[in-house]
Length: 96
Image (cartoon, rainbow, N blue to C red; front, side):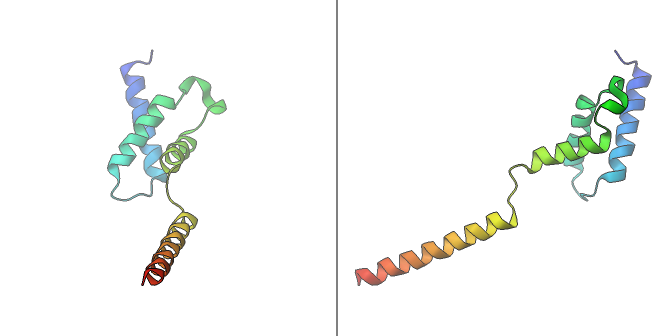
């Protein structure tokens, strides 16, 4: 079990390291979640063999972005929407 001083030092270290790489302005809520994730997953005993804080930031953001929409997803949705409109127009024309 880590002492309070050790815990405080680890928390300060995590905050300092995350501050160096965090680029999402106005997302302190996400940054706080990231620091909690790092604290939970950072293994002090593992040293160089474990993930460093930057790697854990990347892991956290990767998890959060796993379901994010890409440009290709948006283009596919726009194409499907256009095809749906064309199909609707064709059906309407046939009904006249």
